[in-house]
Length: 441
Ligand SMILES: Nc1ncnc2c1ncn2[C@@H]1O[C@H](COP(=O)(O)OP(=O)(O)OP(=O)(O)O)[C@@H](O)[C@H]1O
Image (cartoon, rainbow, N blue to C red; front, side, top):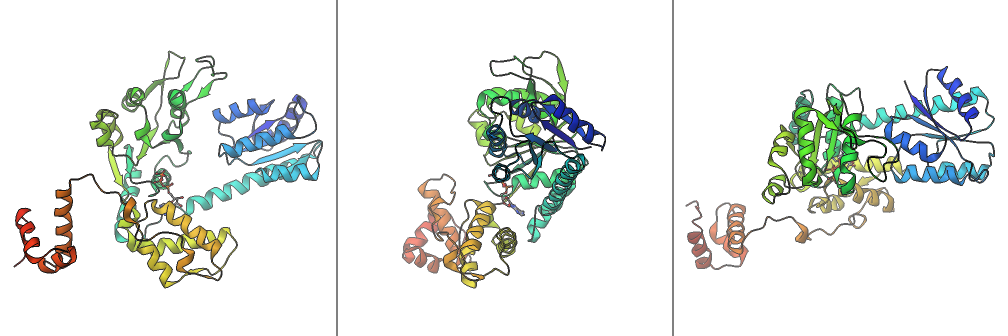
């Protein structure tokens, strides 16, 4: 059943909308003002918002409604909003649509028009959701296909999963894939990005709070563990969880038990945790910033997403995928990649991984003068390896690695490796001896 949030300051308006919608199978919640609507959104799963544009403070300009739409956008809410107002003016309708409203109805409305708008908007979001889940995690190489099969297999278990990988390698997308392949797929996965939560709000974000628990707790708040009960909880950037709170996370993972802030009775959550990190958690453990016992709870199963520079065999297929996606978005057709542009993509080290590839190709699709993307449309600096992540090592260790790599590259020919490195025959052999490098006769 779809839930509609009706936001209007007049009780009789809310009531009449409610009667029509509930008699056609919708569940309705009401809010008298945008701030109450915000709280309601935080605590409930809302499928559609019916929004009055004018409230008691300012009855004609529609500014309060517009401000609410802006707030929804800034908080990345994608819930469809239908705007209602007695002062329907075309410019206000346009402004509301620009701020993300999907439809507009006049007050007093005809019930048939209200129903048509609400049903239309919910069907539209269902369609969008289906297409977006279909366009999920792609795998082209044998190695990536194997990884995806592994993800599919472990999705069916109840084990906690840790996904590791650099920024932009597709960790969030894989988490969503795992949830959709799991036995919990009929419920929505709840996500929380640990890097985006201010330190003093972590506990309330994860476990919820009671009204009055602290100065800003003006209303009750439902935590993510409650929302994710019987579903999956995606903890993105889990390495950012402050050490002081790690014990509480550990407890809920071990026993399912937790308390809301300001409440002494324990609650239980049966959430399955999928977490992701781009940090080296073992290093954080050594530095005393992450609990080892928590890592053991999170990493029952681990999936490592390799950086794009180690999957260059897939770049052509991913480039095609992203070009098609952006072509669609910008209304272009038949855009392809020139040989030189493709070479440029292949010779780059992609520190931002898939996200960067997608952005670079989005820009190229927009910028290309013809239907063929040329090398100059691909705005990257190939050869700039200065950002390439290198493990910390001594000069001597680096020297040994470079010599090994060169010898391997020249199929064991030590002299040619030496020439390449700018070393004389005797100098390279001295180092081969020093580092005890085994060479073929
Ligand atoms: N296997 C894939 N198939 C299709 N698209 C992908 C794939 N992997 C990544 N992408 C694309 O790359 C973008 C970045 O992916 P995602 O946000 O999942 O990465 P992430 O590792 O979670 O990043 P961060 O560490 O910054 O949170 C996505 O918007 C998606 O378009």
